[in-house]
Amino acid sequence: MQEVEAICQKIIIINKGIIVADGSTQEIMAQTLVKGQSVFIEFIEEVTHEKLSKIKDLSEIKMLSDFTWLLSSNAHKDIRPDIFKFAVENSLTIITMQQKGRQLEEIFQSLTNQN
Image (cartoon, rainbow, N blue to C red; front, side, top):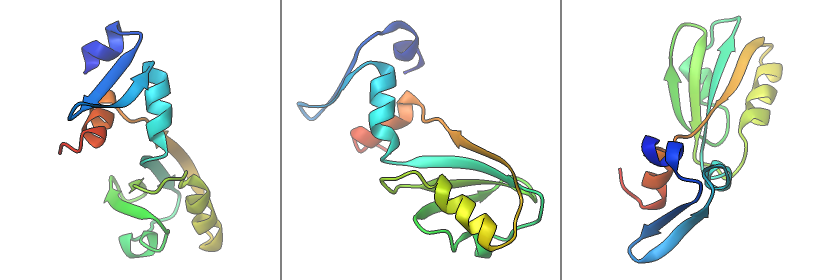
């Protein structure tokens, strides 16, 4: 898929004979962004997994260090406002919040239901 991203200007993804995506790499990634999202978040304070699990719509919570987490959601919305609201309500200081871009390979797998 890296070669496809680097070389192709237009991509068509077909699943079981049906076109499930058609457009430029940027268009396909933008269209599928709302189908899932991962966010790197770093706090100044230590936060527990239990506490983070109170953020709605999270599908995965992965600890990267004592203060850094990767939060993922399959919701059809941007989860960053909910993360920010959670931090404010719990008097936590966010020093980094960065949306992790999805790779074309992940998008292909999600559109063709391959794991």
